[in-house]
Length: 180
Image (cartoon, rainbow, N blue to C red; front, top):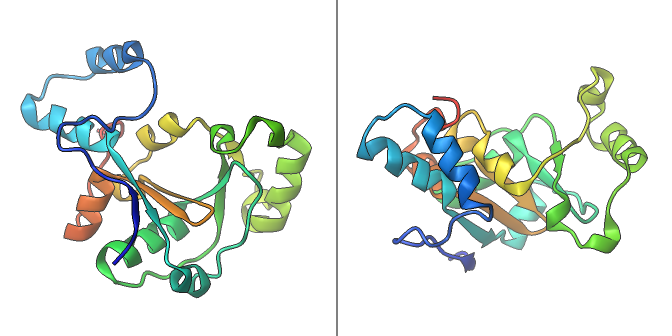
């Protein structure tokens, strides 16, 4: 039903970009919980990119954003839940993150532009000093508090980890590897 631009790899080949050294350092810091713990981390490093159907884009009234700007938080989770399970989740507000590597090098956003976009799209957050943050794609997914929050909307694409997909499908709220 939904067009998949990238599929989960059973062999773990679809891991996030990044140096193996970073992952090795991260694993050394974690306590040893055996194979189950290693499997959790692997599910959080595999991701899928799905094209969001036009009717869902319209249903959620998602704005067209500048290059590199992505939707995160409750809106991304709500769209992910709708696509994965068909269920509708109420969306309270729009939370944005700037991930320069999603855009092209000629369209980098300045701090002033991010500030203006924060005022426009996230006025309540901006009022309390929480505007659009800049993040690396890999770091974004690895630092979400719960697996179901490991999702992101960029243009008409939904990016989510295998852990997010599985846990949304099973309706499980599970702390992410980083949170544990």
